[in-house]
Image 1 (tube, helix red, strand yellow):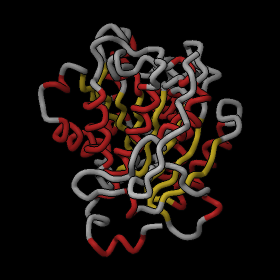
Image 2 (tube, one colour):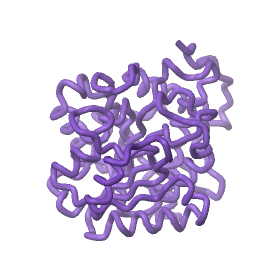
Image 3 (tube, rainbow, N blue to C red):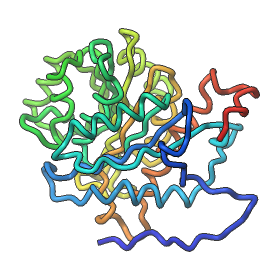
Image 4 (spheres, rainbow, N blue to C red):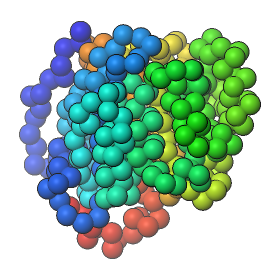
Length: 315
């Protein structure tokens, strides 16, 4: 088991820290972003303690500043934390309701998993009754179209719930990480698949824009599923299924920022990280925390927020 991240951090009043946002019930009015913990783990195909990850990510956020180069500071955002679903595996309905409550208050919901089973309540809770026009983008090495109920089945389950496969885009799908049967299932469903190799052939911003255009083609809400095991194992050893040759940490962060910068994206999840299996330096959890901050920076850069008058909305 990896040791916990060190908590003794230097104090500098001129260097504020990210994280430690107020509880959702402690703030009033509309918010820009709301965090939710969905520590799913019980149906994982690989043994995991991913339920420990939401707390670990919250701790890791304190290592970083809310300042981003170019002026997209998080201080202009009103952010709150809705806490954790109590039994997201056993009571998925309650987990979905918690996400829906967060979505009713915030323009962007950030769900901290948990294994990839968290994607189902995260997406359904954010979409509500709009699944008929909703879209899904996954950053993942895997199709997640398996039968049954597990961390290998969330995309299939969302399709069965009414999501149109023509508005699903999967980025980073890897060789030797999927079967021919599930690749065929993705084709039959009309899913747009962008392989790991194809991500090297175009600018990431262009790939992100195309993905959002496809997922948001019906004008509905788009959910982004960030399966951190899409990354190279050197940067994501805390992901049971990460492999050599995956995305770099920079590529993942850049993709998250580029995708969440689009108004259609209303929610995202970060999954498949087992904080207890991380390297001693906590690199996988730290990368996950940085993806939270990248998504918030992208939100702050959206046109409706990227102007001086917005600073009055900061908490």
